[in-house]
Length: 218
View 1: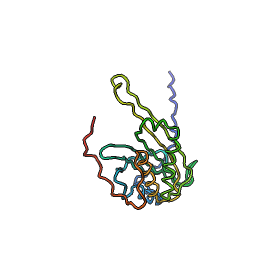
View 2 (view 1 turned 90 degrees about the horizontal axis):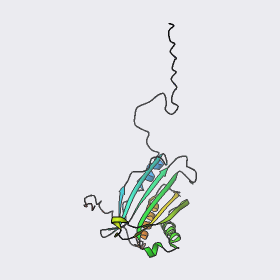
View 3 (view 1 turned 30 degrees about the horizontal axis):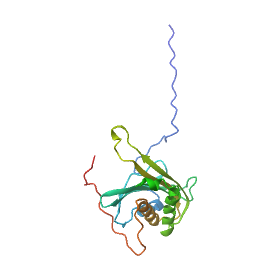
View 4 (view 1 turned 90 degrees about the vertical axis):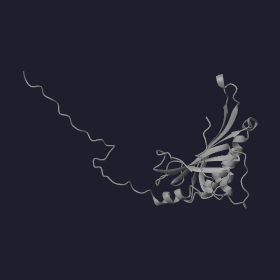
């Protein structure tokens, strides 16, 4: 019986990975990104706001950073939000420069307010006017304003109906110093929570300590 010929298997290199791997620390982020990141967490905020560092999305840009915030009146949480900084040295479509800020704000509101047809334009003006009042230079701003109504059914039928405002926005800062943009975002959250912005001659206070020790209510 003649021998069975075994076909030869030819290894095909994976084009996704380099054939040569080197070990070592990843390259340091660009200096422009590092300088901007330092201004993303302000040293002072108004007393109603609590800031914290949060994980940043990794797939939207080569470099990113993020902060989260909550707005409190006494022990009641009135609004929450996050601000994400994206940095791509080559820029991306729709950006005007290497930086992009992405903001999110959610706040509880009374039903009669969320039913107002002017709520969308008014909420958007909170952002643009806050950016202008803090002298934040920006371009290519865009976003959405959403009203959400939550109703309970079944064993939650007795729960009260809740209404929320959600604002999602992004814009391109034209400077590496993002402190004015962060201040505008904080004002936006306070306005959504029904708290007016501080007068120009009133200084903000140091950030409140984190509430990690507070008991969680199920």
